[in-house]
Amino acid sequence: HVLRIIRKLVEFHPKSTKTNLVEALKFLSNVAKKKVILFILSDFMDENYEQTLKIVGNKHDVTGIRIFDKRETAIPNLGMVPMYDTETHETLLVNTASNKVRLAYKVYYLKQKNYFETAFKHSGAGSINAETTENYVKKLLLYFKQKGAK
Image (cartoon, rainbow, N blue to C red):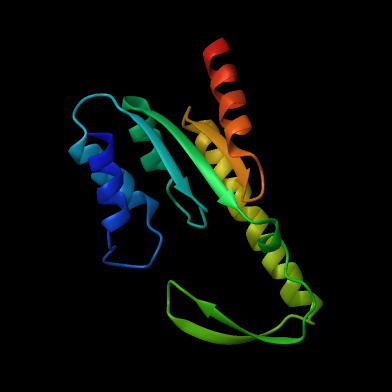
């Protein structure tokens, strides 16, 4: 059964490249009739999912695992750089030498990170921040030990 699920995940081709956690959570609510243990792996660069997360969290055991790379926490000063947005399929020329641009991105990044942490905390769901270079096994073990102690 687990292998079938993994195969489905590997073979899955999304209809959209846009992040929409609300739709994913609503879909889960419609499909899962009994209580499930749910792990959401994402960069959580989305907004306005807290209310839906609370509803799902009241019925299911939810844990959000925010995956991030330390290089995406701030934009370095590299001058004019073309950047491709995988969600909109647009390439924009960004002036990374601009302090205003770098600060605006940092504020945006921190806002998304804080929203993830706040939304999961308020919904009673668990959350893990996992950097791509970290040992995720140790992080998961620590999380489950803390969860088991409650």
